[in-house]
Image 1: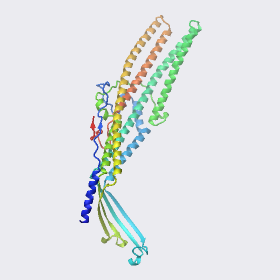
Image 2: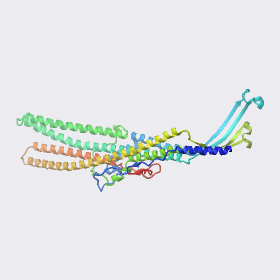
Image 3: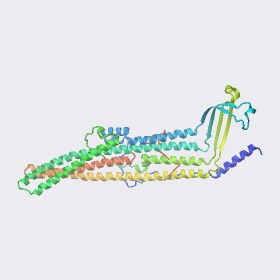
Length: 484
C-alpha cells in the first residue's frame, strides 16, 4: 500500500470518527406570536403610535424639548456606543471569513557554529546572509457554514443593539413628555391656588371683622386661618413640584436648569387614547424591547450552528510565492523563485469534550434567549393592559368630576345671585367659590393623570418603533422557530 493511499484512508477514517460525535441539530424553539390581552378594551378608532408620537399633542415647546433630548441626552450616548460596538463585530466576522494575504520581507545575517552539524570549513564560509521576499495566501473553505453562521450572528446582534437603542430613545422621549406635561399641570394648579389663596384671604378678613364686632366667636377666625394656611401650603407644594420638574427636564436633556429654553403655561391637551384593536396580534413586532429579544434569539440560533459546525473538519488552502536567496545580488533573479501550495485538513478527533461544552453553552444561551423573549411578551402585555385600563378608569373619573364641577359652578352662581339680592352675605359666595376652585383643581389633576397614562400607553405600545437597521427592512421573524 502506497503512503498516499494510506494517508487518504486515515483521513477518511478520521472524518468518520469525527462524524460519529457530531450532535444532532436542535429543534427549533417555540415562541409566542401574540400577546395575552384578551378582555382588555380596545378602541376601533385608535391606531398605532407614529415614530414622532409626541407631535400628536400639537405643542411646539414639547417638540423643541424632544429634539434637544434626542440630540444631547447622555443616556443615548451609551446606547449609540453599544450599537457601534455591535456593528464593528460584523466587520470582524466578515474579515475572518475572507481570504487572508500576508506579505513577508526578511533579511537575516547569521554565523555558523564551528562545532555544529555542518562545520563552516566544509561549506567554505562562516557568515552568511539570507534574504526572503514573498506573499502568502490562505483561504478556509466554509463547507459547514461555521463562518457564515458567525457573520449572521454578528448581524443579528447588531440588529438587537439597534432595537435596544430604540427602546432607550422611547424611554427618554416618554419621560420628557410626561415631565413636561406634569410641569404644565403644576402651572394650571398654581393659577387655581393663587385664586384660592386670594379667596381665603378675603374670607379671613370677613371673619376677623365679625369676631372684632362680637358677631362670631374667635373659633370662626381660627377656622379661617387654618383654611388659609392649608391653601398656602398646597400652593408651596405645587410650586416646589414645578421646580423639581424643571430640574428633571434639564437632566433628561443633559443641561443645567438655567439652560432650559423658556417655557410658558399652556392648557393640557385633550386625550382620548385607547388600545388598537389588533394589539393582541401585532404587539410582538411593535415594541423595540421585544424586537431586540427576537434578534437575540436569531443570534443565539446562529451561535448554535457555529458551535455545531466546529465538530466538522476544517479544510484550508495555503499558497506561497516569493524570492529567496543567500546572495542579495541574486535575489531578484529567476533562479531565486520559490512557490508552495499546501492544502490542509484539521480534524477535531480528540477535542470532543471542549466542543461539546461549547455546543452545550450555545444551547443554554438559546434557551435563555427564548425564556427572555416569552417573559418580555408577558411583561409587555401586562404593561399595555395596565395602562389601557388605567386610562379607562381615569376617563370614567373625569366624567364624574366634570359633573361635580358643573354642579358646584351652579351652586356658586346661585350664591352670587342671592348675595346680589341681599339674601346672603359674602361668606357664602366666598365659600362657594372656594369649593369650585378645589373642584377645578381636582379636575386638573385628573386631566394630568390622563395625559400621563396616555403617554405611558404609547410607550407600552412601542412608541412607533419600526426596525430600520443593518440593511434589513422588516421585523425579526425567527424563521427557524415555531409560533404558538
